[in-house]
Length: 612
Image 1: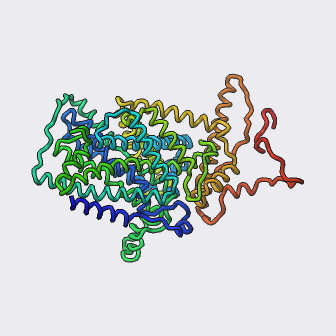
Image 2 (image 1 turned 180 degrees about the horizontal axis):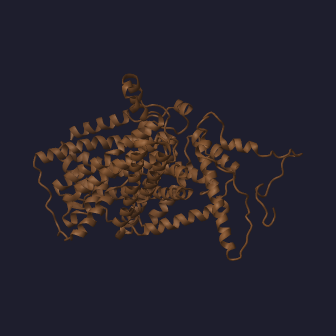
């Protein structure tokens, strides 16, 4: 016991010592809420890293009831291959899309506004469900440790809502504080997992026997076996939202080289292309995505090997797959019972903390959705610490309502989780393909476009496979929910709430969200693009009704032309002022009046019906 206590104290000390610390001068130099590499790894990777606790368990649960657990290696290989393909796609994407926005920005630049709207609603739904599943999974783990997993549903709900409330509170406290807490937890998890690996290899060396199987093995035809293998691969392929999360939230990263890159540029100049690839805030994002590149495949292979060796899966001896392996592995270490309990309770905390990735991305997404007219303007508020507190609070509230509606049952919400992220990945692949076709030539153009196209097709295949693999668990409802959300998004955009004038867009982006630089120009350009799309839809609706003799004049004048992406960003003259400000300066100024301008009851550019 003394050995385990000392080991645990050393691990906790090291995790605390190396945790990122936010200093006041950082806010003055980089801006409020900006984070470095370690904090970015924690906040944008926690959802992905904690898939260790449930991903392989879900995978094997689709195989071992049919005696197919040996094929877990095939599923692990599929997961590893998909991770590498999607990871490489997103690492490349941070070059042309290095101001944030992920597939939302990419689709608006190279594809169509319709696809951007699809991404917007899909990601918001995915972020909410991430919070729901993560918090309820944490509640399940806690009740499982207490041997009360089968207790009444109200306890699952209350504990899940409580865990989500803790992560909500940490998030609104600021990115610096929340990232440090999460980093410490992840660092302890990493070091304890290394200790667990040592214990498991010791168990193999000492000849610890596998658990005797209980129950009967169900038969399966060749076709059914292939379907179960597909289901296993899809269930194990979870939490890839970390890729889109980092691409979407790159705006929150500090724009400077990490220490390794600074050292490399000074001492290994021959590798200048490598150091350039990992430079600045783009480099921070790529470091995070590099850490995700092989993680899923390696951890799935690790857990699959020992699950088969010791014949343990979710539900064996009343524990999860990881819980069983932790019991065996830590059991080979003096005082390992303490480590086992700490490891299991850490799972509860980290699964709850996985919600922070969703909260961070909700902030990065929702203020853009306000600017384009998809969400009411009142949602935007950024506090002095750089946090969009209203977005976080509303996302938390919706998540708790869903937890209540599913009666605290993770299994009801789980089929919807992880499905939506593959739609944005597919759209990113299509956008990158267009980027390569328009900006490269020769072999790079040919092979690059083929690679991006392959990534898009693979993501589409996984998206469909996720729905098929989870069909019996309610995956079919995902098609209905997606259709409803997409239709509702268009109806809201077409309503008066969806209209945005240039001065509104400028106020939302520059004054309320307090965003500057290229990111602000991108969102202003996206907003004008979406307003053009809105006007096109309204015109189409009017023409449709005109076919039936219903003629209704347009209430609004056409919005100003957004122009091209390069023009909006001043690629040739980055020091130039905002293109939207330049446009607003060309508008006629109101004449001065004694006593000031009168209060307006309608927007100045609204035309009365039937009059010009």
